[in-house]
Image 1: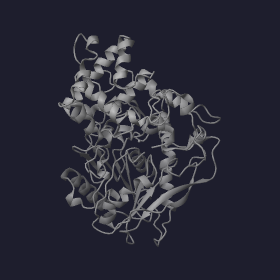
Image 2: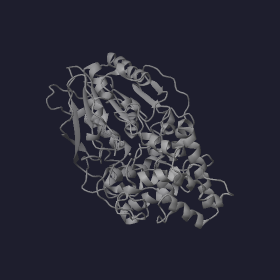
Image 3: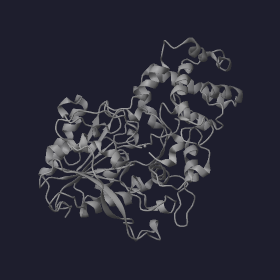
Image 4: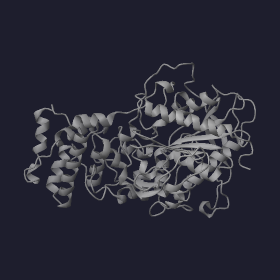
Length: 529
């Protein structure tokens, strides 16, 4: 879900998305497409012409892109609609090539389609993303796109009418797109036959400190405990207003010119993740397959816990001991050295306290208000108006991020980015009910499978939250699956050979295959009637 992007590139566009994953070449078992030409669909801008929320109502359509894979299709097969989510359609090609859609297409003679979300890729209704122009970027408008597309789409090179309800349309999405898949089945289950929502972030919450819980619980404990201890010491310096010590600390990280303590807090949190932005991989970008995993988090922890670090680096552990009653800051030197080597070079002009790409400051209202169309601007708009889930420090220790990182820090960007327009304005804080109206932790629909990973940082705004959600019982009509040891929609990825996958992923894929085949056996063209 969140963006993996350079913080000051926020309005230039990624949560980039294909989450910054490193990919490697693989040898396919059979000839498979490696690229898909875009097709254009005339999508309605405003599906709710009578709703006061969208007054004065834009009329007409916009050009929405979609991409088709008919490699396995045979007449009578289903249509698999991959929900593009918060990135371009091209960023999702792997799901047709080797991922979950390829797996299901092969098993059921299906047709695969990626539908690029409105306000992402090249599917923008307007030339700019002013506050007024973004008014139609809401969950309810996006899921209405899915239903309308299923009723009217045509597929070049594929004969016959494959529209709903004559053909079973089965949706798949992960993260924000997983939530949209779930909402689509709740709201448009008379048109869309079935869906799999993976790591579906269906719940709107304002504060979301739980993002860090799986890292605390299952990360390398010598690394995690070191970061926890360093963060607690920094918090004490901030609480006591020790400006001299804080300046010395900033210098240790090479950030002495960074003026806002919250920007400093976010910058040194980048190897952990967020809040909201991070230029390199974090826990969220780990994956079961090396084809898709960004292992930067492991590199960070390996460096933090390096017992063979040079003396000049380990000596830094004692540099601030005078402020902590002689107590050393264990692994501060290796933490700071890693940050300086991995992150400081990203600020190409060397102006640390600036909003230039690759640098570290967020404190520039004009910068945030740039109305150029971009994935990042679209994503933050969704965050600000209805999703929330602001990554903040927990109320109690241990904590992997500083206590100064709270709601006001992210909300400030919302205020700067989206000044009140002539017709549209953002709420003071996200209107969470816009999403929770679909059911929240109790969300359910017939033929909607909800699949989560138990070490996913977004699990606590999914239906398998161990902290907030009620217990759920899986049935054929309403299947549930919690993948032990899995992260953020890990079932999306595939390697063109289910039998060669690690067992915990293989079994999840086999579950999804069985589930879909059961649904298809019961399909009738009037299912929604």
